[in-house]
Length: 81
Image (cartoon, rainbow, N blue to C red; front, side, top):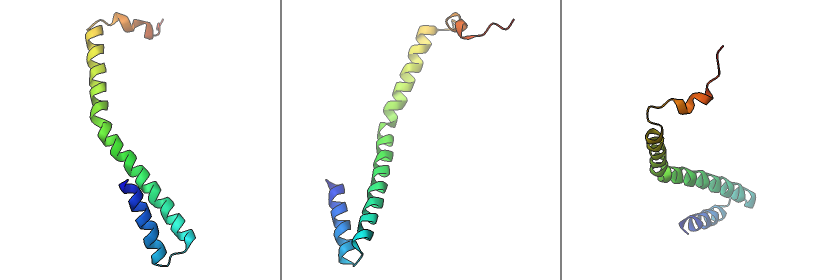
């Protein structure tokens, strides 16, 4: 909701200062793009701890299941004869 108020205020202030309607739409597109990428950045930072937790959980589960047994990965190796 706050973003919508920002965009409306931005639009009105550009019209009041005498910027043409085309200039207003270009400025609005740039502002929406900047806010979109800013929102993606904030969302990424917000989700980062959960992503790290998932990576650690997979690492621990693989370490528990495999142990030191290298036989389970032997089918990935090529025969070097």
